[in-house]
Image (cartoon, rainbow, N blue to C red; front, top):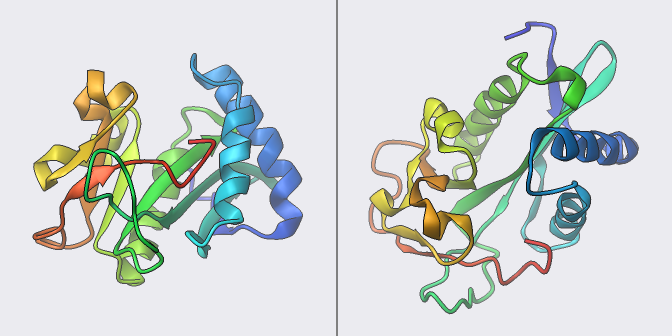
Length: 190
């Protein structure tokens, strides 16, 4: 990890830089998105009742925004078919999306961002974090397959490869008694 990485809450002035880095990150780092759907999801989350401004961050290095990630409230659905009620009092947050600028891949920025972010989630009293992604990366940060916590995927790649849908407790036993399904029906762009 590079110790000169600064991580702070995003500000409105960062939005253009965030759009640029998301495009580069997904175009050059994935084979499933050109980034435009990810930008739409970020904007949709910011406009929703699930947005938590103090849990949306940028990483800076060399006076440049090189990373972005956010956590948002994520109510679990009681059924595979969806439906969340109000969901504003969710005890669980979703980590999505996570982006590192393509010029800064493999420098420990993603790991540094998420370690700090997980601590912030814990400090704010949320009981768990869900994430969908590369289990080889997220397992190193303490995430485990969500079904181990009675939280189940309902669509997409995690149905083919369940290890891609993960959760993390914020403290030992924090997810005990919590169960449900990951359904993204509150977002058009998810």
